[in-house]
Amino acid sequence: MANKFKIGFLILHLIFGFYLINFFLDFIVMPEAINQINDILLAFSGILVVLGGINFLRTGKKSYSKE
Image (cartoon, rainbow, N blue to C red; front, top):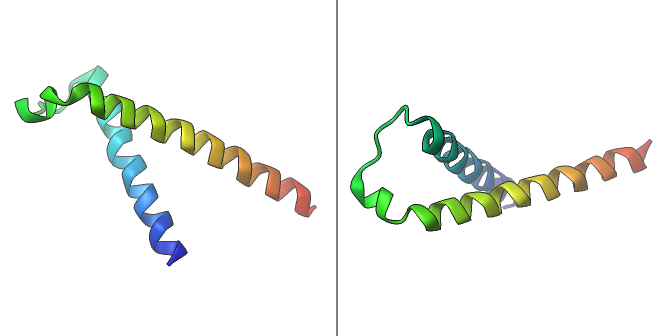
């Protein structure tokens, strides 16, 4: 169960990460329906970036305490 959650979380990070990159570089043209909810997607992407940073810091602390 935990592995499915981690894989799902990784997929969410990848999708919204590519969305953030595409938002600034415009290498893929987005449909108008996605552009209408742009603010919500950007906010959700920012939350995922913050959660990813916190998770990175948490795993870093665990690896140092084992040594």
